[in-house]
Image (cartoon, rainbow, N blue to C red; front, top):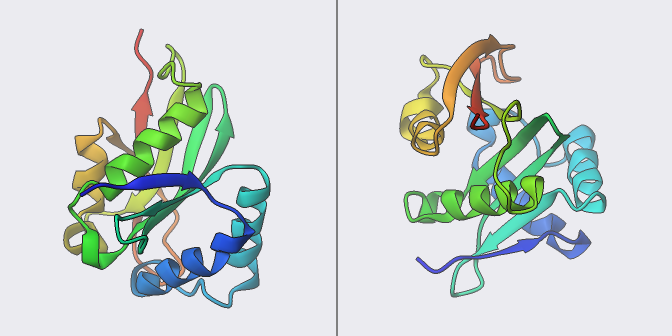
Length: 162
């Protein structure tokens, strides 16, 4: 699938919230949550939010990311159910890595971390999150606090080369 990844702007907030609504059953309430909406606005203002669109200009995914060397973070990533498994997440993560490292890749001592579902969370299997990050080279690390819906979480880490 041809995917176009763009920096998110204020005009993309409804797109991001629409995508968030698709995964609230896994992540807990986001749409209408002032904290989540503030985080979206802050990431956009810092140019740390991306949106992905398919060839039909239909919203396909979004990601919020941040941090600075040596520790970067993917704060939130969503791919629409209708296009999951078609390269949207990979395109978003590739764009994130380019932006975080200025296209140079991770240096020795640098890492990108993401908190995703624990092994017992339904989203780990149905959504394929753990396998997705493992295919990108991330490795499971320490447990993270449970999500707002009560599901287990785990840190996944991608370490820079030596």
